Image (tube, rainbow over all chains, first blue to last red; front, side):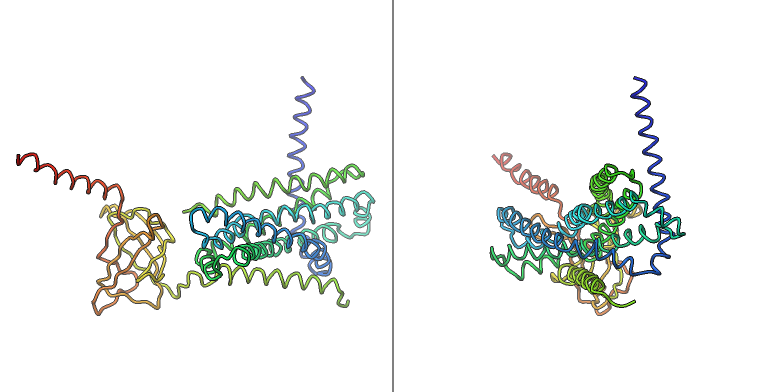
Length: 260
Length: 159
């Protein structure tokens, strides 16, 4: 009995400790960002690894999500004889929810896990310590560029996901099923508000980018420096990123889209 | 430091990302979607606004000319006070009629402006005097029932 209580207490203390360390770590990243931006090629390199290399999965998944939305949307809307509203449905569901959330989940598993593995392995092979010895801050040299690479690429990837999804919905609706092209676009444009729908979606994807990038670099930096520790850290990155994205999405949706 | 192929790829990525954002803004969202230029505000008092919401459209002759900005309760008049913006390109005479209408049978509610015949136009910030409230279905039904009852009552009395 005493053992259970002790372990529970240790877990809580450890969790709070980690949270505090993560907050200080986030602060350090922001402080060292200026230094890392003066060597911009580092950030550009990370932009390549987390942004460019995620393009394929984001574009293909976006297309398929759009195709499915088109098919399902048509099936439901035709019961009410309002297939003209298909463009609206596809665009709003992608811009507000699916674009940022699904792109964020894919980004966490495609790029976030890679960042954690890289930093974790650097820690295992004591490269981070070596940098410290040479008076090179590992946060400025390794962590901050990876963080900003993720933060910058996430909104762009989410926008690409949404654009590709809308193209997929158009492909199914207009090209294959034969919904009127004019009605598809004009109803969509009438219903989608730039500030309310598009900008809120971009804001969501930016917040998800910060969350995923921070979790990824933190888990890598904080991992137990063994082979097993790195593998656990990668698992934790994917799991906690997914949870963070879904929870943040709920919070932000309840602020942004309350139907006034 | 020289250019590398990596820079090219990152450039391509950022360019198509921004292109996607522009596509969402212009083609999907039509950045001028509301299309309201240099707006000015007008207000109107209604006995009952029904289900009118903030951001609801303001239309004249079916064309979108503005949006509802604010709805509040006026405790002196015991009426709803609706503030809305109107596109600066459009002017309405002072005897314009503001109605709360419903698009379709179950659609959203909007404010319809019926221009009158006066020469003078409404200045920004002015209040529209002539208004008609939203049609509330329950009231309509109860009116209809009362009318029916009133019609049928004298009939047995005549006998």
